[in-house]
Image 1 (cartoon, rainbow, N blue to C red):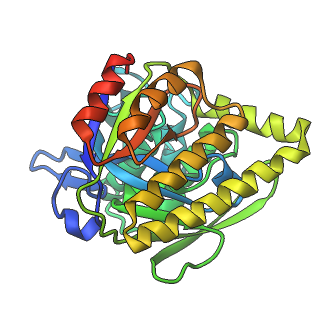
Image 2: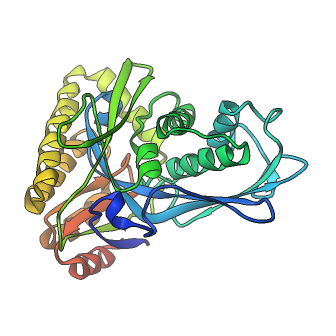
Image 3: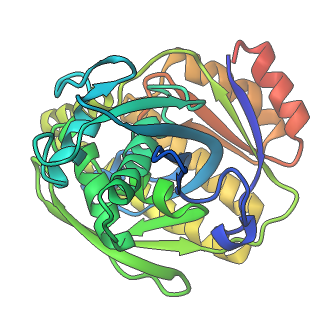
Length: 336
């Protein structure tokens, strides 16, 4: 099982060339293009962000890597490129004109972000792919345009229900905040609008410098694969069956705002409290699991805050802690 211990990121600028910085692209002398982008960990707001509430995420050290090699036909990891099997790549190729316009490529994808774990592997793929194709075609895209393309690829693979949280974090790095308004005290980057099956939504994307020393994020993986689409559909169905659950979505939004205020103040204890409260509401929506609860209960005594991260149903949990080794060992003993 995967356990990850990271210092809490201060800002994209503070990280410099560290592995969890924003998306990177390189052109090699032989014409091969390589690109990578980080995964993400959501601190507050998963699921609710799809319904217009704010959310906060941080970029991780783990990354997706891809290589584009000029070829005479399209392939991905040695197999023929297929729309159903590779929806993110197919969508992005379409945004650049499609397979009949873009010169053929042999695409190789690797990475150390576990799939279907809530850590944004597909978003990191989309973020790295859009920048690699931009380079391949000698385009120059703004962060806004690149973010839109990557987000649309995510939405395409999730039947329209996707916020720009994951792709924005992979593209920008650091600490990223989505909100339904421009937030004071944050660095505003761009705005994103998108129609989900339920409504037309708009988000403002920001990044944030955080001064919160001597705290760590420890991530534990249940090993249970939980595709995002399945969990998003589960919440959508629950809200349709019981409109009263919309209050839970609003509550997550309120918790996220309190967590954001604590981040801005550098108050790790209040950040942790908000994380735990966020988890309790997510659990009430039915997106936790037995495996997640076991890891969360194990990590809680040595942590400032604990919660599932991502869509839930399995995948990963995250603990904010001042005692990372103790927390890591507790998660490991619980099977994470």
